[in-house]
Length: 485
View 1 (cartoon, rainbow, N blue to C red):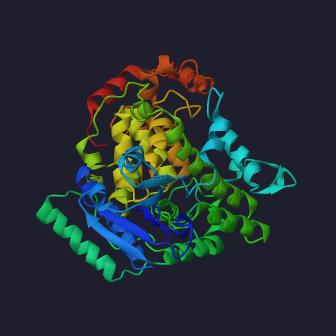
View 2: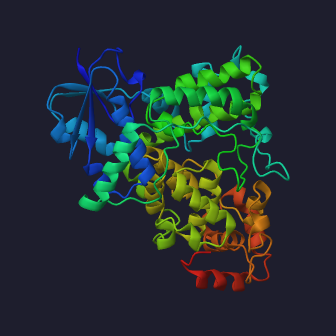
């Protein structure tokens, strides 16, 4: 049987044609020389590769580059980056198969997308649910509504520091984890390979069994509470009721189809409410597939899009994850989460990190690269449209109908951060001015011309002209520069 070459994000059984198929794995050191990845991300990827190498007829080759390790005819599923695809096409004797690990096929997405002026998640998600018969009853959406977002936007419960859900099962490190950690230490000391973030105990699955255990636990114990608080933030509860399955899915340890089916079974059996199940399936069947297909559907230069002409470099404190330099409680806590775990959930990513970067005019490509390197579930395909298009609105609205810009009022409503912060979310100018509130108005003033034709921005732009202290606010933000807030 032909050998299947598996990249490090293709580690599950659904990337093989037969359970007994011979496997080639390649551990490329050059990958880690090119970028300063989060230490915990490097640990997770290498640990997952080496665990996979212990299962079945598998040969693991450690080499400087992929090209020098491929010495035999192999087949490989379509890789997840353009650079990797280009490499596969150049190598002799390598057969590239269609992609796996996603739900909607590329040709089906292209057929859906062609001829549309704008590509929107909601349209694609409804199409995908219909085609794949997910949460459908007789051709209609379960419960009679496609979108239950209005039920899934609750602020955190008052007076609590943690949601009343059991924590996910802990990962138990083994000899492979210890071996990888020692090797990464040697890379840093002897080879000059740099990382960002803190090392720590492994938090995410590196094996198929660990991933299945996390999936079962989430569906049984956390999914019932996921929906209402999926957009909420608590300083003392970074996990909330989120699945934390994205690293395992993006390593290929879980097939998104089995994740979707498990969630739908929970709804059908009465074990989880429809709103939360719909919100979770929207993330997998809808958003994850949507972002994957946009990476390939948009032209290669999309990742350099910069319609708002944001040209500032990332400040050193942000690039180096120096959360201790930040006084704004929300940003400090979220940046510490990236530093210490390589993971925060989607609202801190979008509304704390991405929102702040967009308000300050940091280069979208640099922001995208930072997310790619610093998150354990970050890959080029994940972050390109997520950051460039949605978070930074650098594509001028090709895949998102408005900039995700918000002031301190949003953070105050959806979290417990503001109560213990030295800044006041209601104040936009002065010593107590919230960096997000001031930054929001500064962003609108800077981009009023570009946003004037967007009907969803009409009301905020009218509010901009009612500010009596706008000049003082803009001068304040100019003087703030790249200093940590």
